[in-house]
Amino acid sequence: METKFEIVDLPVPSGLNVIVGQSHFIKTVEDIAEIMANSIPGTLGGAKYGLAFNEASEPCLVRTEGTEEVLVKAAAACALAVGAGHSFYLILGNLFPVNILDRLKACPEVCGIFCATANPVQVVVATSAQGRGIMGVIDGSAPKGVEGPAEKAERKGLLRRFGYKF
Image 1: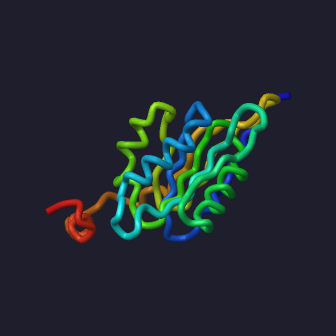
Image 2 (image 1 turned 180 degrees about the vertical axis):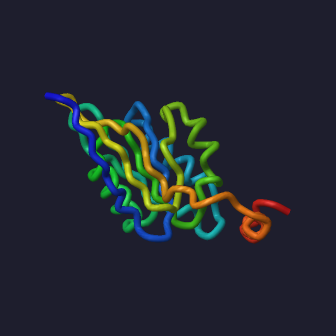
C-alpha cells in the first residue's frame, strides 16, 4: 500500500483552545489529567477541559478524561477524526494554552506539541498499511502583511488586558 495524505479539519467548538500533541504511553491520559487538576486548583472551580488520547496498540481505543462532558466529547471527536496513534487532543474551557504548555512539555510521556491554538486547525495526516500519523498542522490563516504602529499598539494592549504584561 502506498502512503496517502489527507487534510483533516479538527472539529473544535468555536471559541475554545485546543492543544494537539504526541506522546508514547497510555499513562499520558492520567498524567495530563493531573497537570490539569493542578493548573488552576480552586480558581474558577478548577480547570475545565476535555482530553482524548489515541492508543496505538491493542485494543487501540480512544482514552478520555476531563471535567466537562461536552469538552471530553469534543476532544474524542478530534481524536477519531485524525485517527493517529499516540496523538492527544486537549480542549481547554477556562484557560489558555500558555497557562499549561510548560507543564505539558515537561510531562515524561509527551514527545511533542503540534499546536496550541483557538484558530481553526487542519491536521495533515499520512495513512500507510500500518496506520495513521500526523505530519503537521495548519494553524489558522496565512499572513496578510506586516503590522504597523497601530497594530503593534493593539497587540500590546491586548496582552495587557489579558494580564500577561504590566
